[in-house]
Length: 298
Image 1 (cartoon, rainbow, N blue to C red):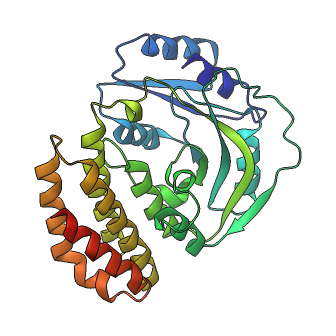
Image 2 (tube, rainbow, N blue to C red):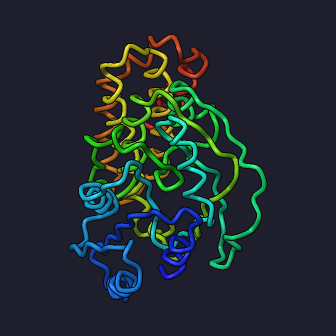
């Protein structure tokens, strides 16, 4: 947490409105937030009972006043040119900008290191959606999280995060991408994702529930595409959902959520299998492979 705040305070772009969310912390985090607000007027803090990452972000969005909005997760940190680089692209009429990620197990990466020329690439809505929901696209992770991005606030002003224990950011981004006209990717890795051993995603006790929630979330994401005149989008999402469901069916076997997962997968198949079967964006080879593998599991 101190490293996170330190990196934000050291931004080359100084005109910041930083809203800290103390989401029912049981350590010193709440006091650390109060302390930084006393020494830096750009910071304010909201203390609330624990509600999870999605509702914590909603609390910040509700009071955010800036033209652009970004997120930094507690424990992670950012390069000194992170905000400057994203704002520069948003000022050039981009709706969403995302940056590269440095995966690290250290809290001491040099956040002032020379980054050279900022390398950018313009992205279409199709590229955004494809990379978010297609298992044949780029790795989903950079496209699904919210913390390596900055958004034009007018684009997301009526959107909120769900209260799911995970995957709430991927749901959010799909809805954002469906209304995005211009997006820019910055290749430079300006966000430092700290792989903390205490992270919830590394906790084996929560893994079964997270696996169930991820599948439920992917199913919900399919509904976001119901009104889109883009059958290829639904095909990418269906393929992603079915591949995901197949792997999760194996992983949740003999766990506390097995029966719950089986009921969910039965519902998914009942409501979407014909869509999956007849969507032309999905190869028949994939469909046949899924059916054969699924039959072996039941």
